[in-house]
Image (cartoon, rainbow, N blue to C red):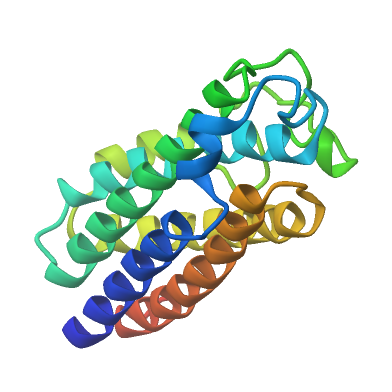
Length: 207
């Protein structure tokens, strides 16, 4: 289990490094893209960056919560991996929005760029896969194995929806930055979904 966690961490780290190192990606674009050449306000690139930044923010928050609710080394390592990877990716997406001259939030409904806008219901779950306020409160109150199982279940649902959004982003984006980052997210999150399924089985639970 320790080895599996280490492999996932290295894989996630490699995806971030690969994305940063793409020949035509963030570094060159950040300094050379003018507002006239930037993706349109209604583009998949802008919509994906905004929505996934919000999606990632909750994953990071959830991971910080469980890190403090359990002493289990494997769960804490997974939480640490998610915090590092998704906080890094979120920073990249917000940076691109700034470079493109696009606001970091919008009055447009979430996932409108995918062709099926979502209307938040007021329960705290702004997009598919996101935990509700009640589920987040339950996680904050749980401890030990109960917290581990709840976190793994919530994060599995979160990752499945995130991977679906990332797959759509990789297919619809017009910039290499978003295409590369989104494709890397799909690989990384699908790998972690498999790891979490194994961790749930070890705890006598299912997704």
